[in-house]
Length: 268
Image 1 (spheres, rainbow, N blue to C red):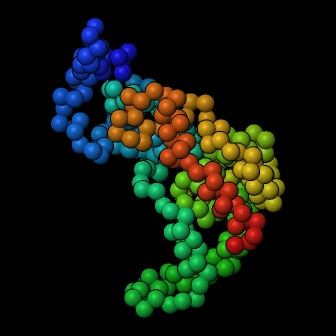
Image 2: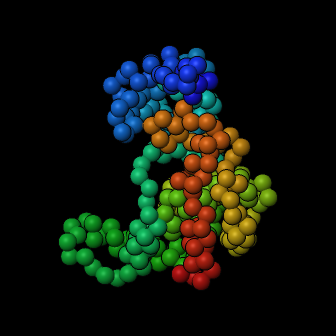
Image 3: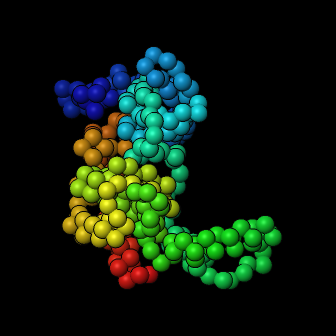
């Protein structure tokens, strides 16, 4: 913080707000507990495309102005995002921020889809939609298999896991298995399913996921070398290594993923 000018240390040991720190604290937004949405201008080169309030980390893709863009750089100081056009299938997709979903919620969704219970409080249209969803779930086999063929060289992965476990599995695939299995794309729809494509088959993919997760005891090993997402209000002021450690502990869950994968093996 001294190096960044946020604080200054006097000779007698007194700590004062530094020049850079003064600019931060002398703002009405500083004392709010939660991070408010601030617009970031999106640039493709020097061309201004538009603005967004939820900023993806570098390497992720999002849609704006009817096109798909991949994040190249995020300038938090000047509230600017630099992107390049992305075509075809990509290995990441940013769908916006939101609260985490617990594994118990996903387990309940699976239970409802596999049940025949009728809920009298549902409107007729909602009851009909639930019936269609149950029929699709039964016919597709998504309640009995976690990795399903999706046509061509594509596959669906339905982990039936919460957000933290889902993110752990996503990074295990991207950073540990993608090259080995020849996966050309991994598109996550957190926390519901992923679409994976590449030179492998559902059985092999499932076996490799289970084997690799057993060996991955350190959540930091699942992160990319430069991956340190900004999740908190003042994360931009946190040292890179500490931010990575915080995300690995708060955003991922290796033991939770192992628990989910044990259910895969038991066919639950």
